[in-house]
Image (spheres, rainbow, N blue to C red):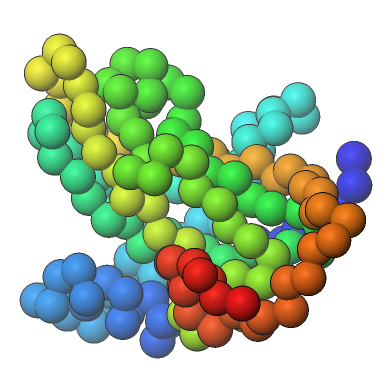
Length: 172
């Protein structure tokens, strides 16, 4: 196996800013406690392809509801690779828990974005059975898989990323 990436926590300042955009009432000590509890993604077994991202706090999603979760994680990825995020198999199978963008694409240059490459997960409980999803703090939330990718022979992309989600669309 080739070692091509490293997970890190974003700075406390970045994490606090992200959490307060979602919930302006959160106190700094509360956010600090969440930040200190963040675990870096890990593979569960030697044969696992996916790195489990853990819920920084309890997530409860009623049927049809969605939530934005700042993971507090960033990934330094070697050029030529991408980190793909998917729902954890069991959560998708049992509850139809889905990422709102179907699969997350974390490019190698996202690490240097203005938000420190902070990885967010927007999840929807798309159950057809009326089941509420509960993910306890520290339990697996989504899984990430590193994959190689190629480019076309006539590729001429030279722009530099500055922003986060959607920041590269339509730029030349």
